[in-house]
Length: 136
Image (cartoon, rainbow, N blue to C red; front, top):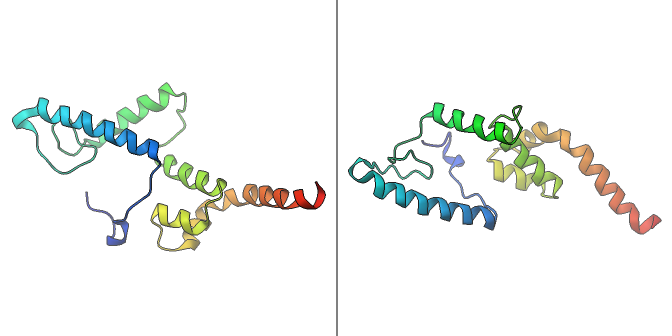
């Protein structure tokens, strides 16, 4: 699937643990490719079906429902993971510009308008940290 805009095509940094999971996934995909034999259709996808074709959206939805039910997170939508990523980045001290780049937003205002709810928590932590040298 092509990205929404050409600017959406970008390199996104991922943690080393995620890269290890991608490598394991690639090994499993090689096994799937061999098992599929002539049926394999290479579309260059990272997460294809067992025969290399794009995944059926209904299959993705069913799988997501099973995963979140097993984790007792029935309220969690798949898109909420994107919001969680942004929130974790901001809370961990990433700059709003960094979050903007990771999410692929075109303007920092968009990022900050969507994630402004995180700012009071960050501001409180920053003020408390700054007060430590002053008040012990």
